[in-house]
Amino acid sequence: MKVRSFTAIGTTILVGLALSSAPALTKTATDCQKEWRADKAAARAGGKTQKAYVAGCIGRASPQPATALPADSSVKDGYGNKM
Image (cartoon, rainbow, N blue to C red; front, side):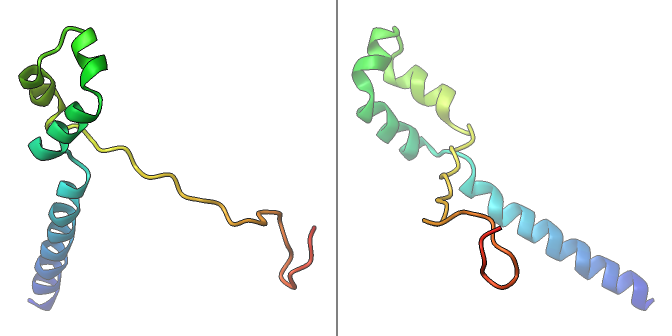
């Protein structure tokens, strides 16, 4: 009985985490409209209307921000000495 309840709790936690992180990765209509306004000239030159652009944009994954490397990214040993 205990194993079943722990499994159910664990599954619930994992599903909750998966669902809570999903909206952060997809674009909303507001995000797509802002993107359209920022690059309106290029989109119109490509023959797209705002309505078509937003419809194709919604739900796409947002680009992940690049992670910055530290200023000194050289390899060091456990004592802080460059290798």
